Length: 154
Image (tube, rainbow, N blue to C red):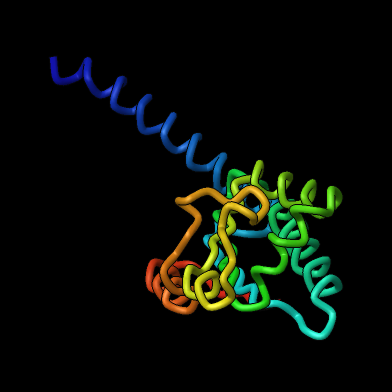
């Protein structure tokens, strides 16, 4: 009976190796390992619109380079960064870019401290849900880094 189990165990080991080898080959083909990333969006005064265009392009290119299934992205919006989601409420092209990123799994988090200080109702921000609100943008940036997210500030 022992001998009859060896071919099965060998087959399982070979299949597992093929599956893992396939994943490794895909990562090698892309040139990148899977990533968890937090983008820091605190605006880009004096030209926020230009900065937001840049950060959205960076996000799109980053997701495209790895593939949505190989990257986890969170954008922490605080300070002037919240203006991005205010602008998107009235700018269809900006809203479309944000929608595309959200479809790829990008999550836009919003600082409650900023909303409170600036007297902004989160319901007025484009596409924001209650689960997107964080107590402190800076604390969230640090917390995500302690959880293995790599920090990007374009």
